[in-house]
Image (cartoon, rainbow over all chains, first blue to last red; front, side):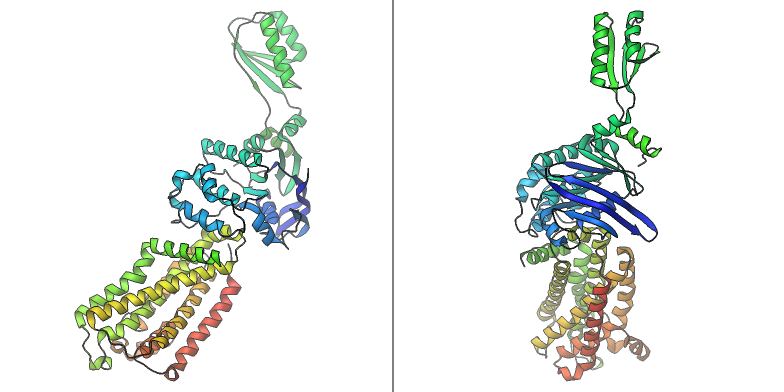
Length: 306
Length: 247
C-alpha cells in the first residue's frame, strides 16, 4: 500500500491563535481518510496546507510525492478539490461549468459522463443559483473529478444538507473510492466519519487526539453494548441466571435491557439462543453500540456541537 | 489559450444574462441619445461650437459607458467573485489568475465597444451623425480610456472588502462624475466653477480626449489627457497587482 499523503509535525498559527499544532499522519492509496472534529479544530487549515492553499509554519507535507508549496501547480492538475465556501457565478449553467472547467485540464474525463454518473443529467441547463444544496455539492464533486485525479479532497462536503441528500452523497463518495481513488475528507458529523471512512483522525484544538478505523476507535473505548427487547410475560429465573454471567440485566416494565461488555456478535447470539431455548416470546430486539460520538466524548470530556 | 477563449465566451454570456449591466451598457445610452435627440435634434448650434447635440453626445455617452463598465460592471463582478468564493474555486485549478482577469477585461472591452457602435449606428441612421476625425485615432483613444478606467475598477475591487461596499463606492464615484465631467450632460452648458472641479475627475479627461479625436483634433492637442489617463493606467495596474486577493 503506497502512501499518498505524508504529514509530519505540521503546525500553523494565525497571529497568536494556534490553528494546527504538531499534526502527523499518513493517508494510503485507495482509502477514505476522514478528519473529524468540532468547528475550529483545525481540519480546514490542515486540508488547505495539503492543497497548497496555505503555507505551514513548521513541519513536512508531501502530497503525491511533492511539496504542495513548491509544486502546487502540479497538484492542481492531478488532484480534485472541493472547498468549503466556494461558488460558481449564479447564472452559470451546470453544463457550462463542466465544459469550462474541463478546458483547464490537459486530459479531462468526459464531463457528459460525469453528469450522468452524478445524477445531474436533468439539471444540465439549470443555472447554479437554482440548484439545491445537494445538487450544488454533487456538481462540486463532478468538478473535482474532472481531472481524473488520483486523490480527492472533500472539505465539509455534507454540511447543511438534509439527511437524505447526505446519504446520497455518501453513496457517491464510496462509488468514487471503488474506482481506485484516494479520498481525504473533513466533517464535523461523527456519524458521517463512522459510516464513510476507512480511517479517522479525531481532531480537537489543533491536535490529533485519536487515529484509527472507526471500529477500532469504538472498540478501544471498551464501552458497554446494549441489547434491548420486549417480553409479554415474566422472565424465568433460569434465563436471568444465565444472563447474569454475560452482563447486567435491567427490567423496565415489558422492556428488558442487557448491558454487556465485549464482543456484541457473541453476546447477541448468546442472548437469542437462550431466549429460544427457554421458549420466551420476545419482540423488537435491537442492539445499541457506542458510536464515534461516544469516543469523542470520552477523549475530550465534552460533546461535539454543530 | 483555449481556456482563455472558453472563459471569455462564458463571461460574455454571463454579462448578457445580467440585466442591469447589459441595460446600462447597451440600452441606457441609446435611450439617452433618442431622448435628447428628439428634444434638441442634431442641427449645428453656436452654443456647441457649431456641432449638433447628437454629434457631441455620441463620444460623451461613449465615455459614460466606459465609466459604467469600469466602475460598476468590473468592480462588482470581481468583488462578488471574490466574496462568493468563485475565485477560490478557480484557484484550485491549474489556470492562472491572469486568465480570469484577462477574460473580464476582454468581455467588458467588447461590450463597451458594442455600446459605442450601437450609438454610432443609431446616430447615423436617425440623426445624420457627423464624424470629422480619424477612425483609427478614435479607436486608439477609446482603448486607452477603457484600460485606464478598467484599472480603476480593479483597484476598487481589490480595496473594497465586500461586493456591497464595492457597489456603493462605485456608484458614489460614478454618478457625480457622469454629470460633472460632461459625459451625461453637455459641458458647454455647465457653469465655470463646476468645470474647475471637473478637472479633478478622471472621466473629464476621457470626455475631452474622445470628443477631441471625434472632431479630428491631432494627438498633440491632447497630450495632457493622454498623460493623465496613462498615469492612471500604470498606477492602477501596480495597485491592482499589490491588492489582488483570491479570497
